[in-house]
Length: 490
View 1: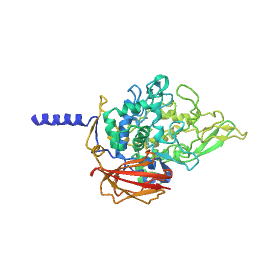
View 2: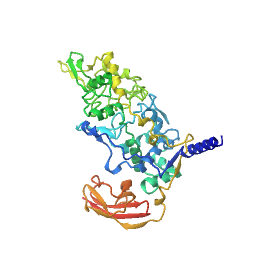
View 3: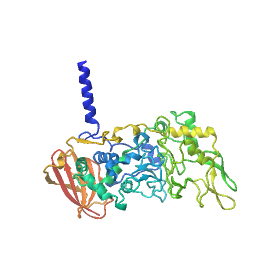
View 4: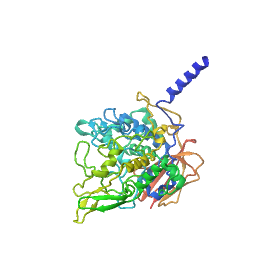
């Protein structure tokens, strides 16, 4: 009994210590996740920019920011309030609750946002339902400033983004985390955007039954040995183009597949590969017309591991079940203001007519079975993507990971080559160790920051930097040294 009391006491101490704790000496691994080898064959574009490569320190800061309600004007709403891990970072509500009301578009799931489907065409596939932002570092700060969502709009006396930064800068844990991630505790819009973007890019889901099948066969058109017959038939329906007969009022599918994989849900990430296609959903939640809702989100993790949908579907959340989605495409599409779908055709009179797919109940069941194979596992439970705050909203930062930025540092010359540089630089003769690297222009503006840099790492990309002179500072965590040098970018 005495040993039991000791065990229970230790267990309680462990729970108290770990709940709401970030250990800077034992960070989660965000940076070494790999995109499947077959992704390139499907044209998946990695959205991770050279100047903001995922590293564990900045992504850790991003995790805290993502779950922190202090980013909203009244401290009641976090990014995670509308993007819940249990639902593949989506929302079970049609309209998400914000600081000043409810949203007029459904909260999209945040699955594989790092991996944008690239068709090779003229369009960059953007973020949000209307694809208005193509740079994630900028897109992630928009909800913070939205008057309805997180309230920091600066409208009618409401706080603005400067007020958010001032509040965060006054908090001890952000002083520690920003210093740990960036070398000093300054809170800026750029750093908030970069940290949130890194955390979101780290949320990848490539451990589904479909991914296991791709590893076994490496040819998506072949039957997967780990699939049921129904799942393989559903896969074929999604991949194959339909056979179409064009009439006066409709284009009717009379055979073949559904063509899902052609533009709107291209294999790999099963998401948009074109900016211009429309699926016939033309209104926001309150009925306001909006013809710009052209984003096709990924089909990955549409269902959870229990086989239930992760929330309403479409931009206005009008589809409560997956059958509602299939029925929308089956028989209820219309041409709106001359806009058609990806499968809209001209009739003999020269008018656009919509396509009706005429799926049978058996075909619907097959498609549903296949889409369920796109459900991952880790995205729902992995602690590195979970809420770091305790149930009272508190967080504790432990570890010595930031000690090197608070002590007096000795300076040593840094050898950089090639110099002048065009596409990359290398750092020469650095002792073995863990480093933080920062690049500034002559105006003192931070242009690049990387944490946990290894002395023997690959070349550092600088192709995105404008021509000019730049200073490089490399902090050695173990020796309390800073190596400094300059290079010319051509």
